[in-house]
Each structure stands twice: as structure tokens, then as C-alpha cells.
Length: 197
Image (cartoon, helix red, strand yellow):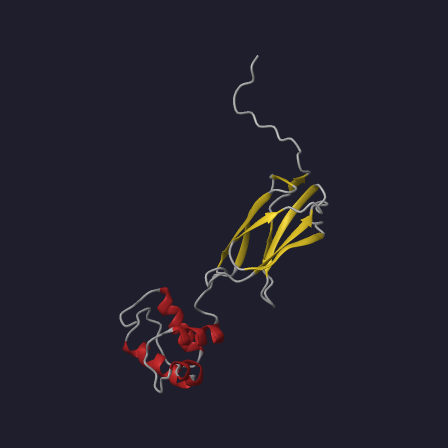
């Protein structure tokens, strides 16, 4: 908007220049920039103006203008989408039959209501050798999943892979190290107070 300045305005002015508009890179959204934006909107009016019922450009950089700039130059969001497995991320011991929460975060990924991800269980055979055992859950659109470990899963060392379920996107992350799945009723030792001597 008018008077705004900074890196977003520089990105806008750079994109407009790439599109062949004569605009100076000033980092300030001034009248010249607004005028060039108006021209850009007219040029791509089928994409920018028609969908919102406008006939003439406004100079206001709204969502349709941003979408067209992104489609042409990918300039608005330089953050590459990524997924990071938070849990299980290595060292955990999970028991067959119990429920555990698989968690992940996404940079530039879950900003728009969470793009879907697939969760897979991989056997940890050794470094860089992780055959897929099963799909835990396909197309999950939030950033956690409560998994009841089925009895069909053998005890052993595993890692989780979370990957984009969006066709054509190759974005995924693995647990940093393996976690163990143990049989139901495997005793785990927890000492809460000193043992009587």
C-alpha cells in the first residue's frame, strides 16, 4: 500500500521490472509503483481483475495480483517449503497396542490450512537403509497424528517418514535416528524414589 517500504516492496518492484515495466527500485511504494502495478493488473486482467469483478487496475497489490506475480516470478515467499519430524525423532521406546502422537512442523508448508502429508513407518536396517514397512496414515492435514501401534508391527528399530501428499512435491523428513517398538507388556524400568536398602 502507498507509503509502505522495505524488502516486500523491493521484491515487488524487481518482479515488475522482470515483467518489462519501467519502475525504479526505491523500496518505497510510491505513486510511480502504484501506477506500474495498475498497468500490470490491466495486462493480466483475466487473472487479476475479472475474478473479482473489476474492469480497471487499482494499484492495490491484493491476493490475485500477488498470485500472478508468484506464478510469473515466485517472488513473494522465498522460504522453501520443508517438513520437520518432531516425534518420534529417535531414542523413544513405543509399545505395541498403545497410542502415541506423531508430530511434525512445516515451514512454508502448513501456513495455508495445512497441506496434506503421508506418514510412513520405515524399518531401520542400518544407516541409509530404511525399507518402507507400512503407511501409518495417508493425507493428514494437521501437524499431528495419534497412532495406535497395531499388533501386526514386529518389534524392532524403526524411523518415521513424513512426506508431502501433494502430487509433484518432493518434500519429506525422516526421524533423526531410530526409535524402538517393543511388545505389549514389555517392562520398562522407572525409578521414582530410592529403593529401600
